[in-house]
Amino acid sequence: MSVTPTAAPVTNTSGTPTIPPGSPLLLLGARSDAATERGVVCPGDLPAADDPELAARARRARAALGSDVVILGHHYQRDQVIEFADSRGDSFALSQFAADADAPYIIFCGVHFMAESAAILGRDDQRVILPDLAAGCSMADMAEISQLRDAWARLERAGVAEHTSPLTYMNSTAAIKAFCGERGGAICTSSNAPRAMEWGFEQVEGSRLPGKVLFLPDQHLGRNTAVLGLGLDLEDCVVYDPWQPDGGLTDQQLRDARVILWKGHCSVHARFMPAMVDEIRRERPAVEVMVHPECRYEVVSKADRVGSTSQLITWVEQAEPGATIAVATELNLVKRLADEHPDKDIVFLDDTVCFCATMNRIDLPHLTWVLEALVEGEVVNEVTVGDDVRHYSRLALDRMLALPGDARSLART
Ligand code: SF4
Image (cartoon, rainbow, N blue to C red; front, side, top):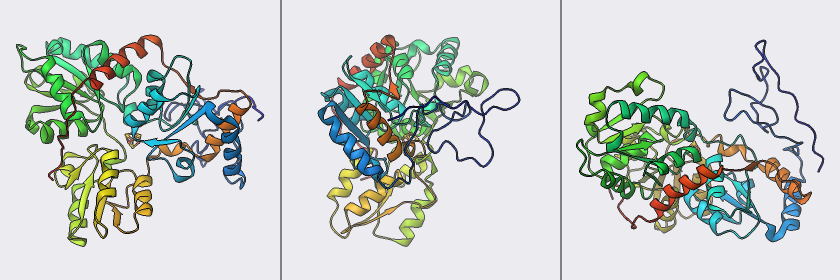
């Protein structure tokens, strides 16, 4: 495959790269946009999206690479990509697949923090490729490492840092994970968050002040875990806003809090509203409402079941034929579940909520491009993690893996 030099970015009068009005917004990641996501470019010629030969080209390249490559696909990927996945899963399952993979190349069809996790858990000689480096996660991007360092300094000034365990959701950058690992903290997933938060409190038991957990980056998962999982009060939680002076909190608020929630959210799951649950129950009285714990507390409180992506899939699979189920998670997955279970009435909780835009940056042209480049012996869009970050984020991950299993659910039933 021919590789051409990267096109110079279009700049404004101050020299800042910009996108001309009316241009498609990096649909194929073909230019740079400093104001968008990671401002990255695709350093080559992407196949045209309307090339009727695209799927055949991808299949040919995939076959030529054989066991040298393993392709991992997140459940939220579009169908044209997921059909090439050797293994499907949520972010945690995929990181475990990556750890077990034998192939020298891992093509990760997910988002950037997931590819970083694969690079952390993979062997030193394995190389991880993200077909479009602009496939970030808006939630992960809401907590930058410099902001977390400032926040920790704020906790130190308020005299609470030594009474606080930092706990980060899997959906965070490797730098954030490493920060937590270096300070005795851990990582959690949406399925083990209650046990991990409890563990966080145990680490600061006996403190002069109430022991605390700093939970980032998703305030909704943190609040749902604290209140619905561990039985704390809503008033025990405060929200630290990295864009406000002092995080928008007084010293006294920080001292009184049990859980300090980072002001971040998932741009997909936070769009579901409690009125949508009321509406679907009016329309379909027999409906069972299943939601992801990244949804707002007010939505989760009204749901019948709350679970991780994998749990939602299992519950749908186990439901009786004829069941009516409304699911609040990413649209690609809900559509796929509906297609795969025609004997059940599976609906999206609300049709104004759309796909995960960043996840959807991985498309067939990008996948074909990285596969064909590998056939030519070229590794493009590699994701790497520095040694220190790798060491400490692995420490945080190992602490999570050492937690005993916990089947506790945030759901009402
Ligand atoms: S669905 Fe939400 S948390 Fe998941 S990758 Fe997209 S923005 Fe991030």
